Length: 204
Image (cartoon, rainbow, N blue to C red; front, side):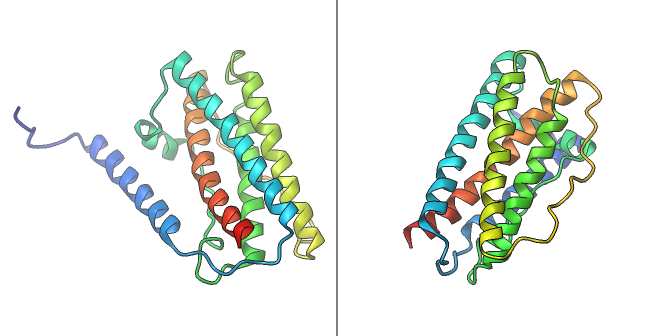
């Protein structure tokens, strides 16, 4: 079969963006973890349990979006992610050769707080998905509270809790559903890295 001489500029742009984000996550995930901290084992085990619970919630939302609305591939929505302004949550202070405990906990909390806001912005996604979205949002909020309480116990918490910044404005049912695919996918990648870090600390 002959290969077209030129690809659609939009498709090429989407592929370039996808490859860039994949490379970014590969670099982060491949970076060695630093030395273990003195975080309580009970806290780390609770966090691992909460991560697994949220991953299950997120997978349930993704499966329903795929089965009900045929929105199964987040990589096909890369350009929409940029037009809607859906942000990523970094964990650059966690997978490093000299793990920054304060920075890592802060980024974990900030990331969960961000995803909590993004999930709230998806309210009204559909009657069928509402209960699943509510459960996911509640579990993310509980995990964020766990992290914040540990930061307070260690004297690391800021004087004031963060305030939620501007969230994407989903102006149609399709945008909410496509946004749900993207937010759930980003949250899963964030949780994969968080789980790796927490498991390393729990086993050290």
